[in-house]
Structure formats: C-alpha cells, structure tokens
View 1 (cartoon, rainbow, N blue to C red):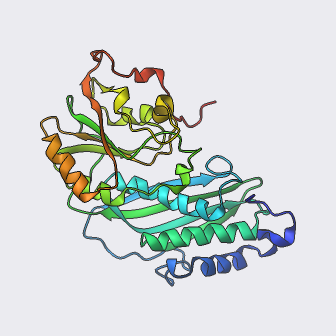
View 2 (tube, rainbow, N blue to C red; view 1 turned 90 degrees about the vertical axis):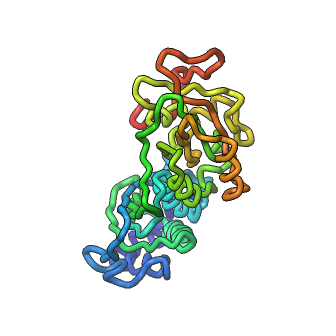
Length: 310
C-alpha cells in the first residue's frame, strides 16, 4: 500500500497536528497509557528499575526499509521488532518506547492508521507501552524512528566485546533471502533466547544480525584474530545461497561467541530443551589473524549492507 494519499482530504494535512495526535491516541488504544505515563506531557514518567537500563533506536524509512508491497501494519510491527532485536542481543527486556514521525503532508490517513494499529498490536504482544513521541513535517518523506528503553532481564548485560581467540561462533535461526521470503517483516525478535544466552557464563559476547553476517561478525571478532567459518555450516534460509547468507542482512538473528572449553554437546542439549523450534548452528571459531585454515570462507570477499555507501 502506497503511503501517500491521492487527495488532500484523505491525507494528514486534512487533520493538522493536534487532531492527528488525538487520532494516534485512538489508534494506539491500550498500547499507550494515560499521561503522564503515556502521550500528553512534555515527557513521560517511567518507573524506576532495579536492573541496568538499556536504550536503543532504529527507524523505518520509505522506501529504504519498506515499499508499497509491505502492508502498513507490518511496517509498524517491524519498527518495534527491529529495536526489540537489539535488546535481545544484550539479554534485555523492553520497558517503554517513544516514536518520532517525519511525514509529508500528503501522507495517507488510512495508511498511517494501519501503521499505528500494527505497532499497537505488536506493542501489546511484547508488553511495551508507547509512552510518547513527536511529529514533524518534511516534503517527500515518510519515516518513523522508535527509541526503545529496556532493562537487563537478569544480572548480566552481554555486549559485543569479550570474545577470545579459539572461541566458537554460533548463530540462531537461518540466514539469507530476507527480502524474497519476507523474513525482513515477519521475523520474531529473539528476546527469550537472548535472555537465556546472557545467563550462560560460557557465552562471552553477542550481537544481532541486521547488516549481514560478513559485516556484522567483525564487531564480535577479538583483536588480532579472524573468524574461520565453514561454508557447509551456514544455515541457509529457503531460497538463499552462500552469498545471500553472508551479505543480505535483515536476518535479526543472534550471533555469539562460546568459550572454547565449553562442552558443546551439553550446551546444545540445554538449548534444544529450552528452544526446541529454534535452530542453533556452530559456524566455526576465531583463529589468529592471517592463519585461516584451508577451506575457511574468505570473508574479505563479501560485503554486507553499508550505510552511506553508493
């Protein structure tokens, strides 16, 4: 569905800012509490947290992150789920969200209502109150940026740093072909999996995959080391080949480093008891830079998604 209306009467310009905010309150319904704990004040009031607090932000921008083939309800859900995936990568749980809209005056009211109803349904599912936001106008633009607040689900916050040479490299789920399979909008953020992994002392570092394994894995790699991956170990999504699994992006899976001395069979059994329907794959391990074993994938030949590149 196209986000622009064909007539002014069907666009956000027919309402203006104040009436649009009132409509947004209706569309969000129970997903947004009353002020000052929700929309209506200059700031929302949040309850204190006993655990370490987390914050992340991600946008959806037309036509960069969605196009006319993506239903607006799915766009709203994707906006929240992208942020939830970041929380999952650190073993966190969501607590609240705020949303900034940038809209062309021609933006369709029907499209925007469906966007918010999709966001609200997703927020209720994951118990995320939408507590505020902002609206700005920009010609030719339909974009939404969501800031998600969270807290550690347990005593540990896990980060991208901490992997060591010889550690094993694991990934959840499947990789590649995210666009043709519509995985980029239908994915499930790995919140319970991330919280479980953060509780395992043998898991040293973790991140979510959004720009492609070949690019994202660099952030997990310890100094003076390199990832040695086996091509046959990559879990390919339906329709994906090796290059797609390494470079397509928008997988929203978790990649993590497991301590070298871990009993991997015991770890795998524990995983499958906890998450019997989620695939877990060991891709290889970290080795000394310049010492890739024969048959290891030459990741330097592959590029993931790079922002601000031609």
